[in-house]
Image: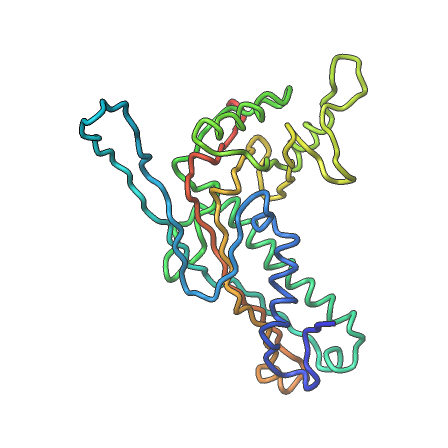
Length: 282
């Protein structure tokens, strides 16, 4: 089993172990990296480019022997440069060297949860424009060019309409992102007045389908705001050189270890119109 500490408790954890400790658990638990929300690419490159069609080709009826008119087609790209996200914690040397691996795993899981929470929070709430001094990417809250719609929680029609809005711009809705408060409201909707039968269906315990698509509860979303997304239009990029490092240098006199986890990740939007931001009427 991969653990945070090597036998000398003061080394860089091998890259493959770091990937097992960090990247794989994040892929399994992060909202951003959920395959229903985004297409995830793990890379060793500093930046990665994805083609983006900005103008469709067109066709015309042409007489036999006549010149075929030239039509414009325009292809751009989305450049995604993963930024650093990191966590730093301290643990006693005794705990690192003598404890059961389960105790080390608890620390590792806590650091993973911290990175995951920040990654998902930024994806949902960030309005930052990334710079060298602040690489936090722009999230759904700050995304321009999205399709906007009204959110009415009296029934499920808003979500059905959002899926059709994405289809109208050439996409296919893959998930709905809702706040915990709104999720409870939706989950308790009934099939009719006086009925005890819920409108929503559960494919398995804890997995709720809305209009046939997964409804993902997002702690960082405020009540009254929801999103419909097309995973094919959202690209998340994770650098594979995640690291877990330990050092006793800063705390040599107190027999403690500093444990640092670092990874680089970001995301981009190939077509913002295939994101529907739904808000309740003021």
